[in-house]
Length: 296
Image 1 (cartoon, rainbow, N blue to C red):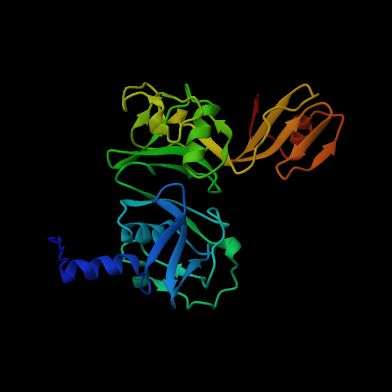
Image 2 (cartoon, rainbow, N blue to C red; image 1 turned 180 degrees about the horizontal axis):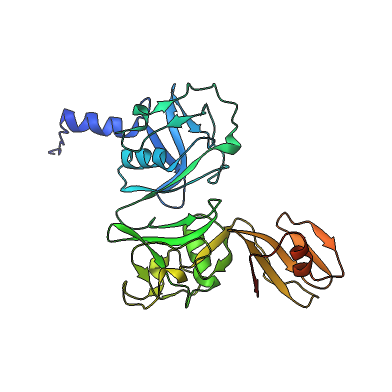
């Protein structure tokens, strides 16, 4: 009986071997929802380590994303957003964004940081298939901001006219959060630039906003004064207060400071409940003023 013998060229075999065996300085993204996101890990001394979030910037993310073959960085996340890793921790890395790889940046020696794995940085990259083409911009924290979508080589925004909590849930989950806490109208996080998506309609069960029904870019009369904003959450937040007359959230600057149940009590963003016969909105006005009040 004749046997079929397959000869693999040495060069191909060498490439395949090194594709599965990491080398010192190799970088990867771990535990993300897509291959374009996850906890940043770097191979050092025969084990995978992580990077502390203390001094991490989007410029560093840009270098790492492009080193991994992605288009660019979308966002970075602090406090072990994709879960804590193991091994050594790099405490500091600083890039200008133009380096060919993270090792060309300035970085701190391994093991010289006091960071813990609870501070492991995460990264979301823009992939050519468009799965990571959404971000939150203009917020004071990674979990909030103006919703921006990458389209035709630039970041655009979404009009607030038809945007609701279902659309917010889809986008927040696409970004790695459990869902949306609030959606905010009238460019609360500042006005964006570029094209505007005038209409987005989701059921709330989609994995990505591209699975929803949406209008063609540039066909809306909306302006950037109507750019929608989102606050995402890793916990379930009730949008109503039982046994109370009204529910409010108060925005001062770009932060929601209170989630209020009027007449009987009000709660802080940290979840503390304080008894009061006065409406929480009136109480907060006496403490320094209200930037914007919306009832739900």
